[in-house]
Length: 117
Image (cartoon, rainbow, N blue to C red; front, side, top):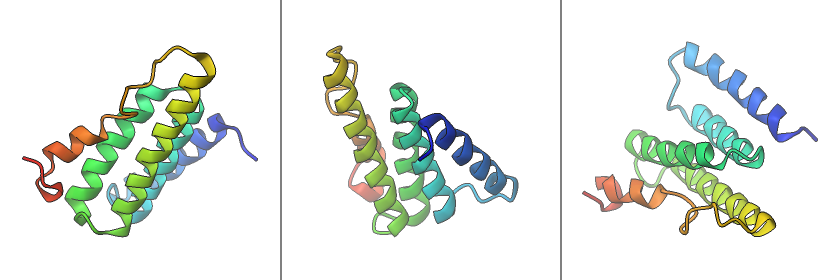
């Protein structure tokens, strides 16, 4: 089993290879961005991970619409990062995780496809 840091490295390299071919919002790129955000959270960089999943969910909805499997994967990443944040908060007792776990709900509010603005 690889470490979170190794997962971040591997996902970043794979994502960069896709980006070189202009595939930033393909389902494969979205899956890699999910992996990157989850691994980033597990590596202890929660603020970065929350930002990643917020942007990821917004991008996935804009590109594929609310019912696409890539959007479902992005939502699962939001939940995974939220859960990692809650576990970290409970483990260290600092209360550093946002109360709602992530700002992804704000992404919903700004997304017309999700009933927002």
